[in-house]
Length: 274
Image (tube, rainbow, N blue to C red; front, side, top):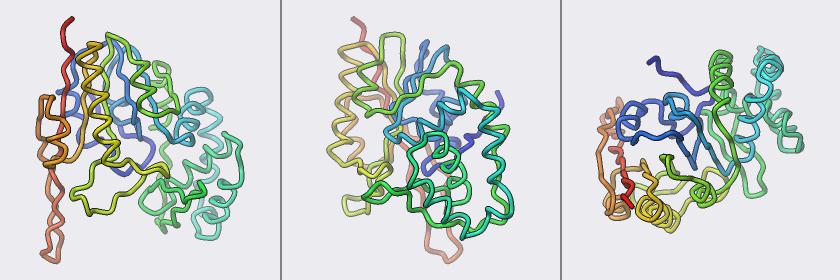
């Protein structure tokens, strides 16, 4: 099966881990993802149905618009991927327009544009909810037309909702499997912890998610797979799960200081029989 890339750039995207994740996902009719992000697992699996959630309303609006009107959206978005818009002034104007408008269609066009033209494809908001990623200065940002059309076709099997993970878990039914890709736990308790949607995912949240996952498996017979950094903390949080370590390719930076990526942990809470 050909691997399909997400049309968004995404910090912590799961494209490189898709094969490992698929190997550990139990068979089911429906895949539920409370932290869908860029959707690499959705795009590279084959379930009858999908329930895909995220707390970022801009992300979910974009997905629903591409699902419902892909041709028009691709045509309108393409108009922003020209040399005149690949300049710092134009980028800052669009970022300002994005922060001023509440129109879901306009915000979706600008969100895609900023994802490809902004620095490192980051998605970051300030305390007031304003998008604040700086201009990326790329030679020619890629326009992901084919990826969007593939997404739109696959989205016919998907429902996209903007909500917190507890709500998504409460919608899951027997016959589903849940895959969670939360904002990762810090590598040390002092590590600066980037927040994704303006509200950080704290250590308490990490522990609460582990509890919700275990309860879904034990009390409701719904298996749950969670990915996270492999640390002492995450191993303790997921002590009731089957743990697998995925070796991540390590990159050594040129100056000899090693830029080691940490191994990934896949924790499976298997469904308990009635």
